[in-house]
Length: 199
Image 1: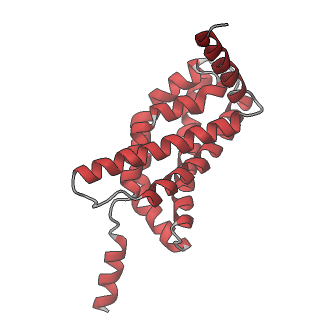
Image 2: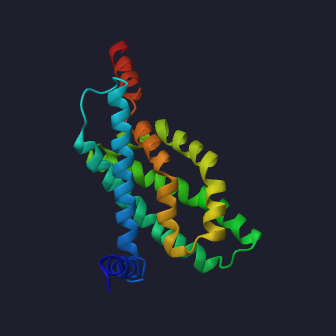
Image 3: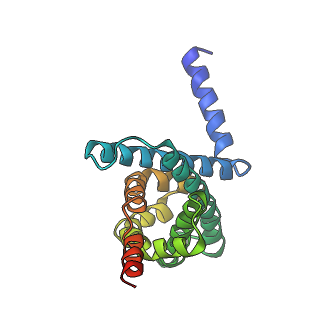
């Protein structure tokens, strides 16, 4: 067996193992972690270019990677749950999956995203809740512009074990936007400060 054929054989073995039921959770989490990191790195490079930040922050990227782990776990079990209770690829089934994905899963994982980062940033529950109220709607609105069409393709053509891989490839641009929204200046501390000063 030549070197090229041997490499292809090893890649096929790795692929079969990585996307098997035994290791699928770890694969999905690894993909989410990696692409959440890449999304933040790209966003920080853009912010550096625009003069919005002065230097790259590796801690910020590590926090975004950790949030990717939380979201990856949620999405892994969510897709399995959907396929268990809504099997098939009819238009009716796909429409139900898309609605449930947008109405149930999206708010859940957006909340998990902010809670995870709030814990890492040592914020209290009140601060996390205020940040969710201020910023989460922007991510949810973006979800409705991107994911209904993307999820139609996902639910109609993509096998379950490749869905998170597909999600993350499609959502790389969304991950950049997610990082931007999360790390945009919050107006809440300013409002609180102003109120306390006036009183």
